[in-house]
Amino acid sequence: MTSDHDRDHDHGHHEHVVPYLDAIAAFRAEKDAFFANDLHSPIPPADRSAFTGLPYYPLNEALRFDDLRLEPYAGDEPSTFQIPTSDGQLRPARRAGILRFELDGEPGQLTGYTFEGDDDDGSLFVPFLDGTSGAETYGAGRYLDLEPDDDGSYVLDFNLAYHPSCVYDPRYSCPLTPAENRLRVRIEAGERLPD
Image (cartoon, rainbow, N blue to C red):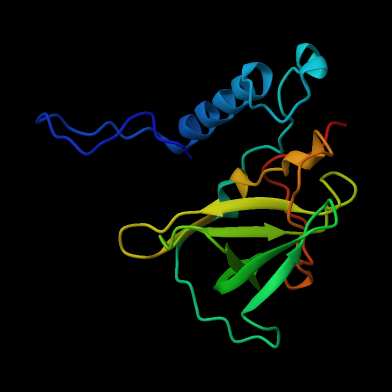
C-alpha cells in the first residue's frame, strides 16, 4: 500500500497506526479515485464517466499471512527465464524465491519474481491463479506486489490482490501467470470481476 507521506523525520510525536480495516478501505478509495480521474488510469478515457468503483470480495483477514521468509528457488525450471505477456511479448524475469503459507490446513506456496532492470530492493512480483480464475476473476490471474519488512520478512495479503491493467484496456502488456503459481483453492479476497 502507498504511504501518505515520508516518515524520515521525527518531530517528537507518536506515529499514528491506522487499523487494518481502515487502511484497506482508504487504499481502495484512493485506487478508485485514481481509476476514475487520473490521466494515467488504465480505464480508457471514454469509459471513465461510467466507472463506479472496483468490485472486491469481502475482506478476509485469514487470507493475510505475516512474517513469511523468502526461501531460495529450488524448482525444476531455470531461475532466469522469459515471462510471456498478454500482447505476445517476452519479458526477462528471475525466480527470486518461494513463499510458503498454510491455508485451511493445506500447505501452499507461490514463487516471487523480479524483472530485469528492477531495483534490487527485495520487491517481489507475485502473480497467481486460483479456483476463481476465469469465472469470478481474470482468467490470466491476479497480482500481488510485495515489499520486504525491515527484518527481511514479507506479508502476503490476498486482500490486496489486483487485476492487471490489460483487464481494462488490451493495449497494456501484462505478464501472464506461470503455471507454478496456480493454487488449487479459491482465493475469495481482493479484486474480482463485476457480477
